[in-house]
Length: 192
Image (tube, rainbow, N blue to C red; front, side, top):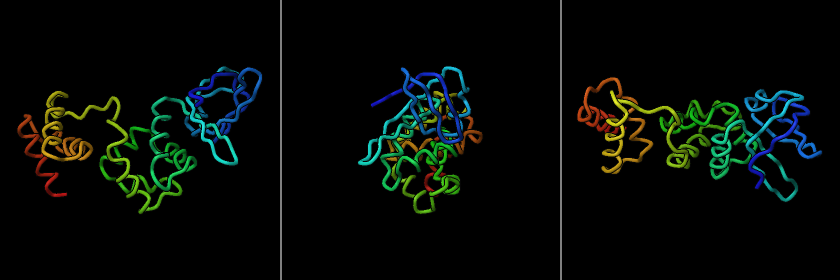
């Protein structure tokens, strides 16, 4: 697997860039966000994933390693190929996708071209515990340690971690203590 590519940016477009690496121009399919971060004539680096098909070898590039990791996870969802996965990351950052999946926000997921209501429901079901926590976005109920305790308690009671995190996020401003946060989160989860 080609994990990253660094070289002089020869061309950049909305959905791809061409980087010269060792005298060879590599066409790398990108999100508009990754492409806009590159400057023509300057050195650029993309985190990449090589997708091998019977009739093609296609290199997909991302500005951050988290985007590449999210792309890899999206490829594991039935019905989502590399182009659709790239479209998802063109519309949503990895953290926005994590939030949408955790909140079961079908409307946010259907904003992606090619993803309908059934596709969004399948994404939520299959990605629920695979995307990991939102980076740099600690759910708080006053203190991060308290929210972690509430989440751990809910998980130990049998709730999926993504549901627990979403419920704690919903009650973050309503509770002044860990026990109040746990009680409020349980009430939210019981209504679902």
